[in-house]
Image (cartoon, rainbow, N blue to C red; front, side, top):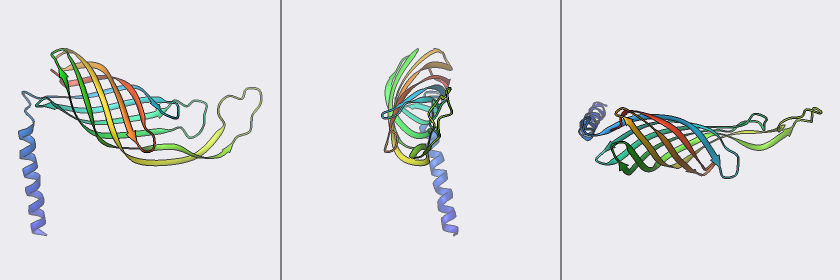
Length: 190
């Protein structure tokens, strides 16, 4: 037991030493970004998306941790509404100038959420003002490995603030999707 504890403490110490040597806070660029937009599915309609990302550019390589949430635009049915979450670790390259940057990245991730399964029943019509889709489906939860892809265009008018757009894709086995997000970045962008 003692040897295992010493091994774990040693591994954590070596990791922290290596991590502190990788990031040069004077030379590297790092920021968080957040945004809203829309997503589209190949065989279904789309909905709203929002994202949150943590970014680091070190030695001209982008390292990114990205979270996306997608909610179906569904006012009048069918039920349940579909909702997806995606988390991805990405790496990329691109062009970084003083006032603009274009970055291409891809990686590995996990996508999960709620999708509609088998049709359970359909509510009968209520009369003249029958609005919406009255179908009710099975509530099917899923989780799938994914390949997140992203192209970022960020304009940096101020040293610590940027605004732009991101085109994204999420290749997975259950609900492959693509979309766009308008975003703001805050941090050491230039």
